Image 1 (cartoon, protein in one colour):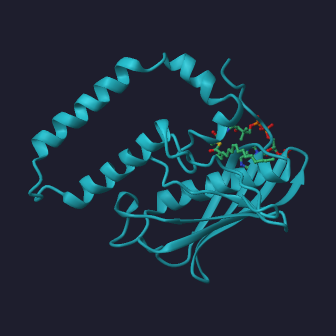
Image 2 (cartoon, protein in one colour):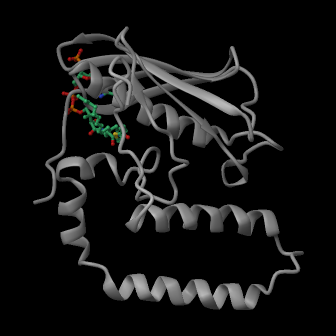
Length: 206
Ligand SMILES: CCCCCCCC/C=C\CCCCCCCC(=O)SCCNC(=O)CCNC(=O)[C@H](O)C(C)(C)COP(=O)(O)OP(=O)(O)OC[C@H]1O[C@@H](n2cnc3c(N)ncnc32)[C@H](O)[C@@H]1OP(=O)(O)O
């Protein structure tokens, strides 16, 4: 972590659940690449993956216990579907704070996130931006829940290329927080977002 660019998201460890999740992401991507015409022994793959899922389910804590754990301490940034090293659905997108108060991260998305041919699904872009705007609010000090998120899709967002996702808080008036952000490929803005967040926080599970 560089001192003028603090990391705002959990750093993945190469052991424990983080390593297993990294492997699971590879499996999801590899299955999509393989497709139905693959020469891989899919019945055996399915059986081995089912055995893994059953092993995990058998040893998991209760859902209530897990929710408490997720919402305590550093856990808060470990499970979300955008940055979370414990969440195989997350690309993941690491985010850092910049000296000007904005935040930024880079990510390259593959086939699991495809919408139009060779391009990122618009809902996936919305997910990345909603979360990044939310983290920008935390970083700025006033945060809340998304009330309205307005997106403009300027040009198709490419898969397989490094994207920059960035956001900044623009204003706070009473409980209303305005935040903006973009997804860029190189210097070109692919998607821009304007969010109206309302300062409200649901209680954390205990
Ligand atoms: C130091 C290091 C820091 C870094 C650490 C990082 C840690 C990061 C950790 C974690 C990051 C998390 C990032 C998460 C990002 C994802 C966020 C989400 O996905 S949130 C889920 C989706 N959103 C919902 O489910 C909301 C559902 N809606 C509601 O609950 C309510 O409708 C809510 C809260 C939006 C408003 O309800 P009310 O009752 O509290 O508010 P009322 O009193 O009605 O309105 C207050 C003012 O806001 C306006 N307002 C209300 N709702 C609005 C809306 N939907 N759109 C626009 N304005 C709205 C109203 O017009 C009013 O304005 P007037 O004061 O009259 O000027």
